[in-house]
Length: 394
Image 1 (tube, rainbow, N blue to C red):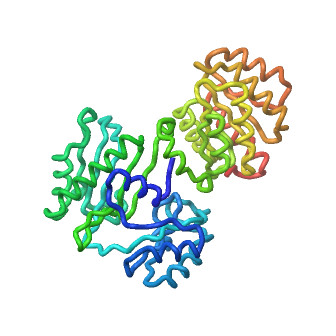
Image 2 (cartoon, rainbow, N blue to C red):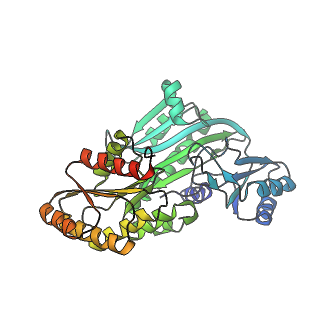
């Protein structure tokens, strides 16, 4: 789950991590009221969307008066902001962060992630703040410092000091930087973060160490024990179909193609999308129904796929283990009968009760095309969509 920058800063503040003083605003009047509470001459007006690259896209403005705050709020609220992370459709700005200006002396990068190769939480830091860390890694890899954390001990103060010295934090500010890092690590662990990124982390001319920006993402599997994080959820930032999927425990991500996919297992779902593309088709979604889906869950998955008006064909690829192929087949038949399916449907079943599942599909009398292998299934659905469109499936 993603949250907004201002929400991330509210959370960081609870853990003693220093952040600039600021307020959220949903209207121009609220933006001005927020600016009036801020004592600095410079105020920053920041668009709040779940995407990076807001500054480059014109979503961060420097205001030198409350009148400018109002003007920038008027400009940004309701604007569709297009960044490298939003895709061409962009995201509409519905809220702003009005924040005090900071007299920046130097910018740094600080991030905490799980390194899957070592199965340990790892702190990544760099003296090159304000830049995308991927760009830094490509152009100046020697300026990236990594510190692996022992899960039994946690981030130790000596490690935080080593990080601070390695990226060039001024000696007189190292203790503040250590406090900052230990607080950020505590947030990461206690709130089940998947990433905690501060870019930039700044030191100011007055000697403060601040999170000028904050990106916190959370593992959905840990939200049951972090109910306060659920309060930060902004449904306006999520795809309606993904919201609906979450109600049924479906893992769904909308894509831009026209071949709907229903698969059990994340790895098989990824492989299914890859093989569709290898036959020059374009998947419309990632949809993992999980290992123990019921008939009702399969019906919900079908409704979800068909709610996407761009879908011109559906590929079902199921390997029955815990999930039985006959249950899947019953769900498919029930869903197609209820929805009145009008697009091509290709089904590939393998595993537990596969013969029974195939028999259920055969006896249904519905226009379902069976497939034996993944390649066979992908080739058939791409061909059927292509024929229906009178051109190439896109």
